[in-house]
Length: 185
Length: 185
Image (cartoon, rainbow over all chains, first blue to last red; front, side, top):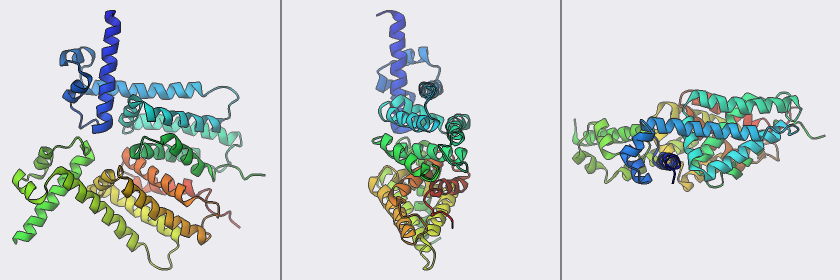
């Protein structure tokens, strides 16, 4: 195996093992030794790739941020209505959180960082504002508040159970949008 | 100090220290030694009161359960409408979660236990069902789904920031009830 490829695999194995540990034990409770044990990687190899546990966490947050940006990009097909984008994007995020421990660990690391939380909420609020402009939501709907509640409920649902998260997210939108959609003709 | 009183204080100190540790490091990441260090209590004294870390967690969950039952009892004054009870009770719970680490730790320990989660949701759904019967909510409102979303959003908001939780909970109700309240005359 070429050396560069092997280095990439090692780096990836460290990130995956750390994500598993953070996901079950929490970031503060995770020791470097636990990550080494789970990944089967030596301390020397670890320090070749990362200076510290904090640096691994940084990269998992970056991974989560990239996944969000990727979803946002893929769901920005011209012609799609903003409300379908908001609900579709969060449904896909929920499905990814169900199956990908790295994205999940990244989300939990990000959720205590005000700038990450704000970016997520703002992105969702922008979509909901577009939906108000497009008359998909009532003029008196509150995009910023709605985005905060959807975000909090997604996080809380994920904390309770990763399984069935996509269904839970569909229910969140159903409840939250019940009053925000214009009355049927 | 009478011996019984001293024993009570020791027991309380163990619970408070464990709650602080669980709250910052998570249950899985908390060692018995960390609890002993924080409480300044010897291992012998600890084992006089509790057989294990698990037993301390059990008691914190019981504390949380009792606080919920206490709130539910105090908010059951005849004449109060069910919707005011639901919103008032959760606002008071949020205020308590902001200031009391034992209740907070109890909630986080309880949130992975389906029977505790179900009891909480059911209690809230019952109030919302009464509100539907009392025409405070629309006949087509979904009390069970609404209760699940409010509960998840409360948990998620608490995970992000304990500070300002009561305001966050008021916003959750405002968003969630926007579509559930009957149209104004």
